[in-house]
Image (tube, rainbow, N blue to C red; front, side, top):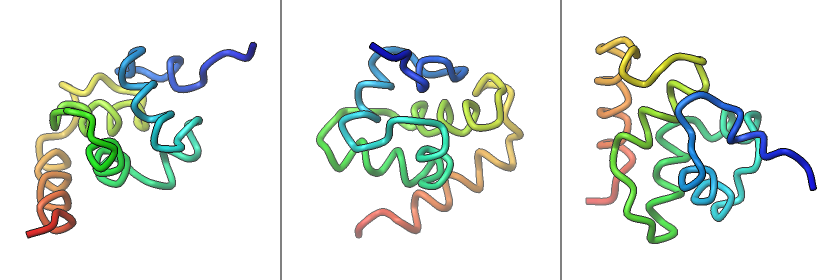
Length: 88
């Protein structure tokens, strides 16, 4: 059985990886293509009770930094993007 590429990324644990797998995201490239907001929305659309911390964790994973160390302006941009993509 092959190693889970998502578990090798910073900030992503077993539950996060399982949620992402359930949405069809299985590797870093797929995660990058969808982006933090898209991946978060996909997880939520599957009915998982993920908090916005997952979105920040994904963003940090893609930048290889702890999610708490993300630039505050970047976090704000993610929140605005999330608000724009969320249904009314």
